[in-house]
Image 1 (cartoon, rainbow, N blue to C red):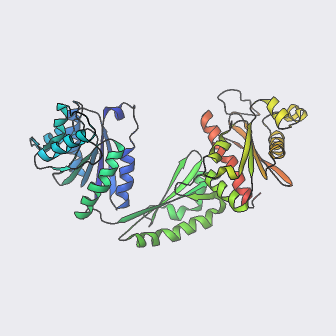
Image 2 (cartoon, rainbow, N blue to C red; image 1 turned 180 degrees about the horizontal axis):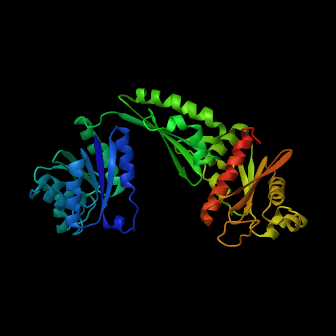
Image 3 (cartoon, rainbow, N blue to C red; image 1 turned 180 degrees about the vertical axis):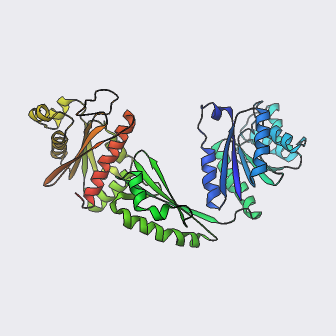
Length: 414
């Protein structure tokens, strides 16, 4: 049982827009045990659309197409589907009246062109659209069930939830429940983490465990399929526990949890305040902390100390320290953290310096070299790393590194 998602629109094939519908639909289909085998993106070309429907219906049991249901001349889904099926388009009076009523409720005159939205391939069933003028299409093509939904995300999501999913369930096309759990880690490389989990990530393991990397965050995705949600959870639970036991403090959160959220929870639990002194990250650490609701209770403030004079005047970094070690150094980043903690009266202060590039690197201090400092009551420390990547990637990963050092300190690790 495999599905194919067809995303229709030249805005996708030219790169003008990002197709988020296919991602969302894949996740929703996965939740009811339907694997998506193919994503097809096709421009607004009639022959190419016809070919896409014919190919999809020959290899997939379920085909969901998004887009191309509007009233304009480049909306070709209904025509393409009719040609692929070898049938004519027929007018559906109730759908036309529903479109008229929607315009009337908005107190607008309906253009004659919208009449085309009430045309359907013969034998197809209209899918009502409570949120827009474009009804969807439900029909069979060969051995495949075809569902065509609008490309507008809000309309697509509502139509899937209220119309398409119930039909799939009623036909018995959703064979199982599939649950996904994601564990997020920071501080270890992808191969290093896989080495610790090699037996769990092997092909054929039940449940399936996959590794993905994104901006230095390594995530473990656990997929379980079973007849019920309880049975799927029973597969996931021991694997989740094993991963946490083996990786320890490398794991900082589950599912969509970000490092700043994990840090803020710990600050709240331990009733600690924090301030930031940032050079290379230019306020990114403070910004991410401030994204978390309730941050004002624990984030006191921060200094963007990009200029050396700001480091010495606002944070009290001795000029002699800068002259001896250079700005990008452990002594300077530690002095920044100490000065920041004193200036704000915070329990903790985190600081960053580094070289984000693309120019300015030397053999001793290459682009990507960064230092993170942390000051607390009775101590200060620093950590260094050399990132590879673009300027923005280096800044983002350094901000994560700084947040992670705060997290580890609050967990009692030095």
